[in-house]
Image (tube, rainbow, N blue to C red; front, side, top):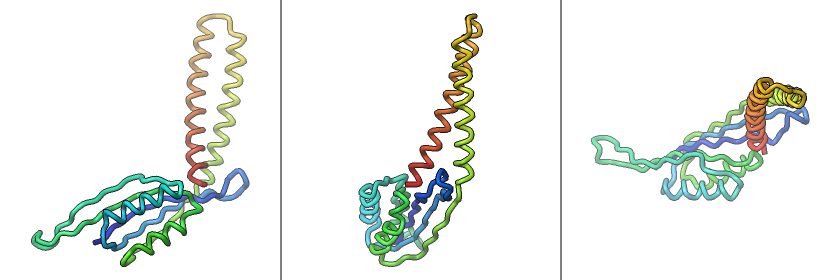
Length: 171
């Protein structure tokens, strides 16, 4: 029986310190005695390591005329970057056979730096709008500035959320 799984990992490097931020993804196809038990054990391991299950799929595959079936599964987990090697070794140690293993990385440093710049600009715009709001006297002006403030605050929260995702993924 074979089971494939994808695991996304990120580096613990920080763009703020001038280092690269790299999102790594490891893909493995392994043969195990019991895909269901292995999937449960890997999911439990991910949670113990501060990670979680992204997706899980267990299914039957028929071969030949349909008389021969086998259980297969796919599992996607996320764990902290510093646990990458430990997770891969633990998964390999439970496998009867490792059929494939691939690790790739995507450098997102520039995207993170761009988000930092965008956040600074949005926060400056928010401060200016708050200043204008404080001096506005006409109801129409107050409402117009208020609507712009709501929009800018929404964008700030969106940027902060994306930055937080990168930061949490890199730990």
